[in-house]
Length: 501
Image (cartoon, rainbow, N blue to C red; front, side, top):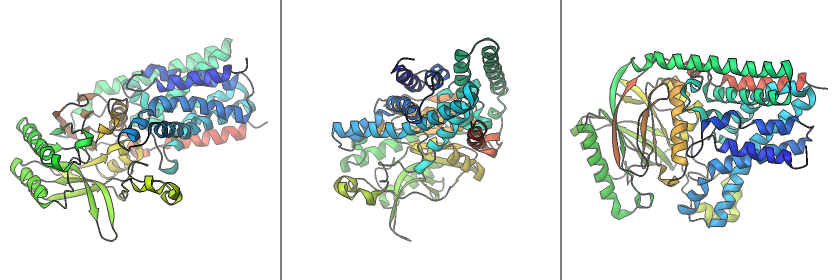
């Protein structure tokens, strides 16, 4: 292999990974995305540093292509100069790229010790490092490899057993089998191709049969949800002169949704143009609306408390048909650099910039929302990308998943589409309907098999009314959690021991 070709292969892998996700990609690319990188790692003995840099190269391209929109967000709404915004994207992509870099380092060590046969553990290495990406320093499990297959429904059904990491494991396994087949010949190649084909066909057939059965769509009690997408421009949300118009818009759209049969109305994150608990006039107007229409209303509003110590929360309030507040859920997973500043004390040298950010406090408990004698849950904004958090809600008794968000920050980028796709994976994992209300879209309803029942466009005003069901049947994944990730970690550790030379 000529000098530089291995880096070219790493670049191709990064590009294919980025092209596996919405809005502009296609899930088919994921099935071959790791092959070039694996070939680069396997065709010659790579020193540890070079293997790490090859993985970092793939990771940098992967995350630059999928997270480019973060630069637009911090530039447009944070007032950050363009060079600083570009630097922010680069640093984020480099940090996220450390995990594919660790993957490449592990695979290269396994191959150095065990030969090409060690590629059998590439799938475990990918899942192990991807799992760490979702938990280290609070984690950022955005665009996991398995998420790319959420629209490939027969394959995605494996998430009901092993979660999104199970889908990642499958996709990485196929990649490793293809790479092994390309690097070998004869019987070994036939075994690799045959094994991959058998596994893929078997899982696809099982997933197809599961969807065709569709029993979850016939269970439980039905309820019609109204999802209010008011399409409020981000720059207008906190203008004093716009508050009345915004609130009136939500009230009008709620009336329309109830007229069309909505029995449970959901407004987006931070829908209130004021703090619900502090604005007596607005608070009473919303309570009166719930009493008049005889429907529960879920909405997002900041919450400020003084006891036991001062704190500001990004919260979701549920007002019941009698006009009372039945529950308040406080966002647990905050957005770093958006809702809080990591290691704030260490950033004293840029204190004017740091102090300009609103610092929220994280919620500490999973609060369920009682609706029509059933328990529901909500996730605020990007919390929905955390599989373990949504599983926690179902373990606590949630029969319906909801998520509220304000994706106006992301403009017309890929982010709103990625966000909706990642949320849809939670429906499959937990075997629950998922209702999503977004300020500017994408709003919609996803059934327990990941099928999109109803979906809005972005940056359009819409009030979706759709039937969902309260379900209490538990999937295997909701019971066992991320066991596949722990198995992957154990397999990698065992492989590094067994393949010692």
